[in-house]
Image (cartoon, rainbow, N blue to C red; front, side, top):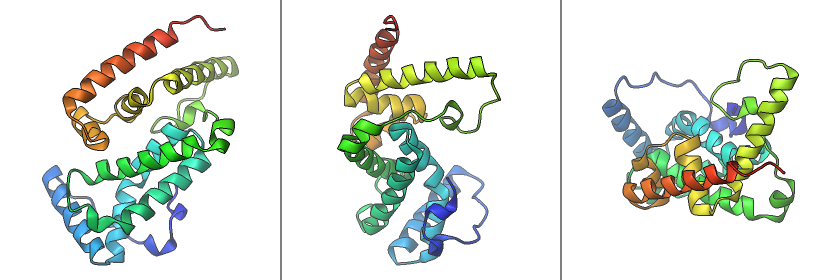
Length: 207
């Protein structure tokens, strides 16, 4: 997602990333405190650090780029409106994912989304474009991807959420637990049942 999705007031030169995870966590904590105090540059940096991950999550959930952009932007709007409530509880990105997930749930329930939902192209689902495929390979790959997403859509919501967060987004069980407000052990159980259900769905003969 390009930076022009967000307000121009949030754009600017960004400092180099800290060299260690500990330094990164401390730097992010300072940015959050500064943002709570109204520092616009701190808001800019927080958006720049996390907008790609949030957008990718929204795209994998909604699979419509225009919807994902809208929900991603609304995620940051809501986050900054309620930033004082965050109080450094858990990872900031987990908190953003929780806001995004709730917005995606609401969006997916809307009548227009239910009737118009589509699957994005194969080269738009991963972190980078895939190598060029010949037309026959591309059509087959797109069909496989569409079937995978149809199977994910068929899962109960609690199973679909862990598949998107852990299976597609690659979150650890601990981080997924923060997003879904449960224990890592509960995530392990949900993910195991979700994978079993998805494997069973994909094993069905194609109509």
